[in-house]
Image (cartoon, rainbow, N blue to C red):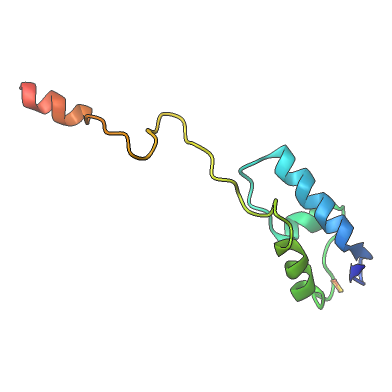
Length: 90
Ligand code: FES
């Protein structure tokens, strides 16, 4: 289905671009502008934007996955703050 008539972008093009961007960088925030750039195009009239966004939202890869941050403890673990330990020995 054609989503953007100015640039002849289909829903499949948008899905493919989002999947490619998510595979390339799991933490990237995907915007309509990035999808246009990934497809080598740019928006003209903007009349497709609501359908463009609806198509993007239907892709499960649009959201940034929650990844564990290095050096952070998992929820539920307790630890001792080094600053507290140090200051109590002075
Ligand atoms: S229809 Fe998409 S920019 Fe015009």
